[in-house]
Image (cartoon, rainbow, N blue to C red; front, side, top):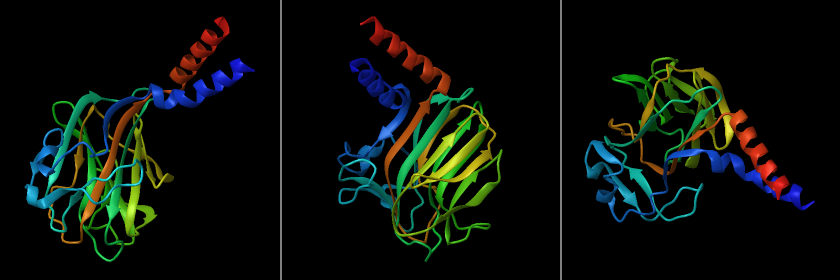
Length: 240
């Protein structure tokens, strides 16, 4: 019985323990807006376009701070990481908390971005709020710039408050989730080495503020690798 219990615990923790974390940031360690740069390098705009908000926090992880982009934000912050391309059954999990302050009453340009490329930009994925056709104010938007449909409407209705945007990026397709539910699956993308995450659009946004928190980017191994790891753990328990 003890062996089964121990193996059950091992099984429960293998996926999260085996993922390769590329970015994990709850924005709790920063003392002011200027201290965001680095690791979030100010690429577009000024500190007047956003600020470290010490009075608000996204719901995914506990804390007291987030990053807020103003209603006229033209700011973008970039965080680069080791180039990573999912192979086989691997996939990237890209996720962040996003606070919508306007719902469907306005159409800001507030969103997160993830870039891929080797010697040039090969793909760009975005999630959040966009304001140009075919976007409509009722829904949130996503973008697959080169290998997919470019901007398109997700199926989740905009509502004020915090939401969790998440993308599972496989070798040739991406699945989009909002608030833990699968929204749109199997969107094709051009691929490449993913190398940079971004907060903000870098474009003016007259529709309202937006806040970002609890940023995560990790590479999840293919199920076969997880199975081998679990079998190795079982063999170790049996030897004991």
